[in-house]
Picture 1 (tube, rainbow, N blue to C red):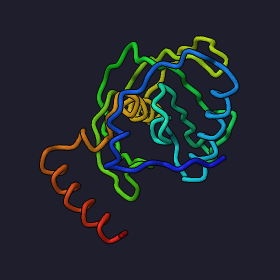
Picture 2: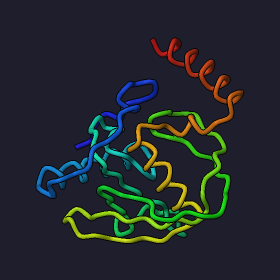
Picture 3: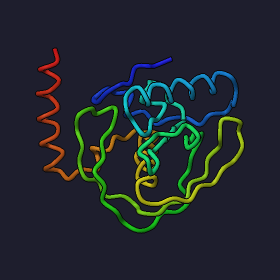
Picture 4: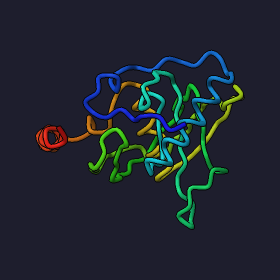
Length: 171
């Protein structure tokens, strides 16, 4: 089932998500719905808070060399923690909760993440480049942050002004 993606400045996006304690059917349904929602919105990652569920859950499915989002490459991460990060990279990011806006963000180039899969089995992943960016972006959502908070003061002010104008035009 495709769920509604909440958008900035929805206050829920500022909520710190809680750890998942039960790896059950309800969790599996949420993960399946998140996948359908992300694909329908042409996204590469989605945190549960973006569908108004404040749980430490995120999914990532970046396109492969053929530019295809293969479901076999889908990462479903429950209660993820970054245990190591190093290096620096700048990547132009967008967000399904801030549609139509993208900006350069500086992040770690290389990270190691520990998380649980949908069955409660512990996983470790080491990654860099775009996949590392996706992880860091989605994990910020779990902490109650949106990528625009990483922008410089000037860029942030410009964004806020343009975003308010865009919201007014929608009404």
